[in-house]
Image (cartoon, rainbow, N blue to C red; front, side):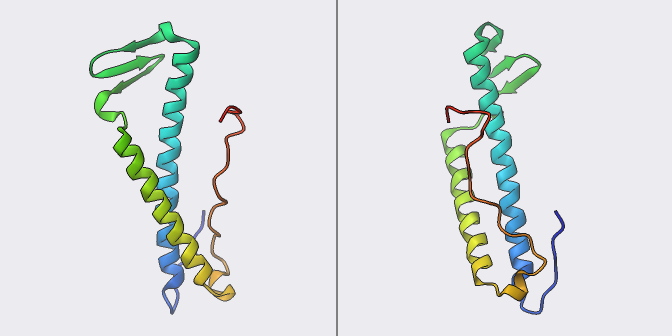
Length: 120
């Protein structure tokens, strides 16, 4: 994703920084969601393949240490961060003129369901 930088007003620079942070958080959320989905699917379909120890969970070729497993607080902080970043990106985008938006990447489309997980 190529981002335009440089502006007399500084608004596009600020927007690009905010957008990059939002996209990074979304990537982290996606990685975490994939991990949780994989564990859920494995527990649902292959429970005999799961080994749960006091400080780890292992299945297939994965081993996740307890310290790597997200707490409810971790999930809440990540979601709160995403919401703040999303609101900030949307606000800066809305405040920019058409000329300032020219050549910039628009904010990502709002969240949607994963078509591969129809029960969600």
